[in-house]
Picture 1 (cartoon, one colour):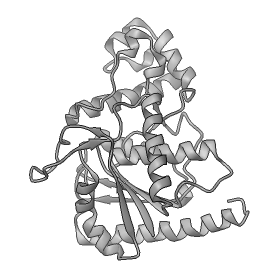
Picture 2 (picture 1 turned 135 degrees about the horizontal axis):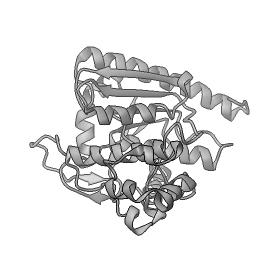
Picture 3 (picture 1 turned 90 degrees about the horizontal axis):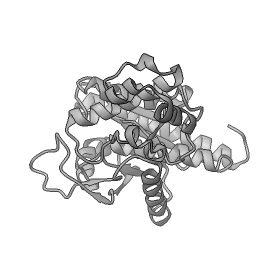
Length: 293
């Protein structure tokens, strides 16, 4: 079972490999992980162990559609050269990229088998579309027609000043922006200049289950930490809402924004990954045989 692994911001494939080792041992030799490094050099992620010397990477310079398109093309090239892969595992920013890639592939090529048969999303954060037309009308309404008081006070503003659809997007954008600042990540971040420049194209197209119809149609396993920041857990729940509920398993471990560390938690997670891999393999076989699933 070949699994593509995507690290968090300010980390690397080498670091994620060390972090994944207990889980990899539990899964056994039938699971082989391939690690894809981001192409953007960046600072050490807050919380990254001091003993790890780096280098440190991000997958993106920002989250606008143009910047997201660049990383999806990078990932596409990596998969063509090193794949195919049965599944994908992402941690933090890696989940954002994995989610965006899966939805993008499903949207562009709905009649082809999914990019992966299953996905494991650990400490998920907000995912963004590479399609500039995604949520364009909602964003344009916010940028061009929201009240002056809303624009000047955002992200700490009165969200009642805008319509219900715009409010869902604006509240989520504000939460993600403030979470990035609170954690201490300097780059990549979400800049708010667009409210002054009226640049609709630069606004991240944040996937939210209340705003987009697309749902990830492969088995997914979601992992969050009980001690993670509430703003981060909320993002994980939003990403979980983008997935088919009938093909989903969720785990909560005793740690924070991290992989599970306790033996029983790792064992339970491995069981769910094996469930997702088996279910995904069966669904892929049916799809290739011409059955609609």
